[in-house]
Length: 264
Image 1 (cartoon, helix red, strand yellow):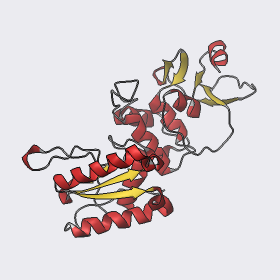
Image 2: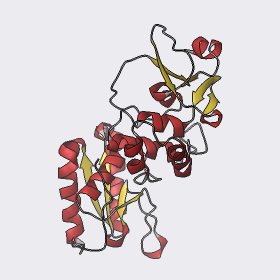
Image 3: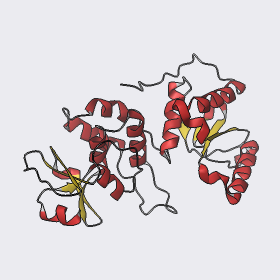
Image 4: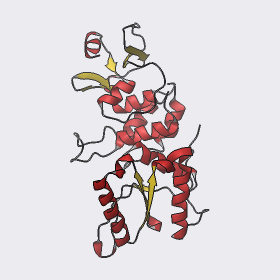
């Protein structure tokens, strides 16, 4: 791909290829496999093995250098993928774009882009395919999700009529005791939910999970543990489990919380 981009003027890696270069999450793909590149809409079409060429309106500030390769910016690749991703996956990709990295885990110190960067891209590409979905998705992007599963859990809570949770907030108990940082937190009712992936079956992780549960108790919060089996069928089992915990803490439906539009 690098030689292709270098020898073809005004050409940049795009779509899934750009997402991979920025270390963004992978999602189920529709369309041809190969290295994706984009050229200005009036440029001649090029056919090369293993190269998927897209032609579209491309502004100079929507391209940047990444690892020595010209590539579309995170905000632009997000908009390009709005054509093929589901609404939930597009929101999850947006959450990953605006996520604040952890210095001890990530090789960068700033988010890939901001919500305002994405809004500006949407505003200048009004007739682009997928633009309606993009306008819905950008309103649902939040800073704080560390994985697509956390995003899906948050969106499912909204669809289920629950209050919108906060993401990975630091819990503080009586006397300033510092508790965990729940994946999703309903601070008014002191309920936190944790999504536990497959890695939570290891011995060391089990010890850490037990310690985390003890810390929930210390700060007076209820912990709701969510596994992969709760995430099927639009996370209905996960939402029901969280709903029961909220009920036990005094929450009742019919308050002022209104879920944003979550479908096309």
